[in-house]
Image (tube, rainbow, N blue to C red; front, top):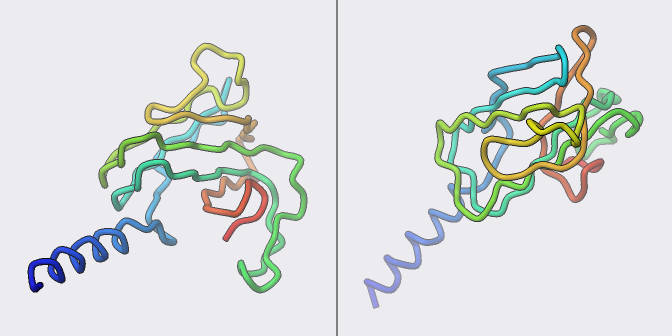
Length: 138
């Protein structure tokens, strides 16, 4: 019985540690020239089959859960599906040609993406978030 409890508590702790929280991704690259692109590094393991959204839509300034929302949803959104394998902490993921999904270089170095973002060289913010959908961050 102790072995079962130990194994169960180990599984639960792995599951809790595998959750993505604020600050677990860091942007390490931003290219607003040409076909655009960006890069992130994960500071924790990312669970398999995760969906993470990236958007350059404007935010209203309020906190999520307290009226925070995108002012509009007409700019750009990338949906990143991480794939069937977990992504180890420290992995750098590069997103190429994000402004043109018909470009041969369009995609991510890990997993797959859909959607487009046209990044500007000034006055631009790029958000990474989890959500119930691509316009509702949680």
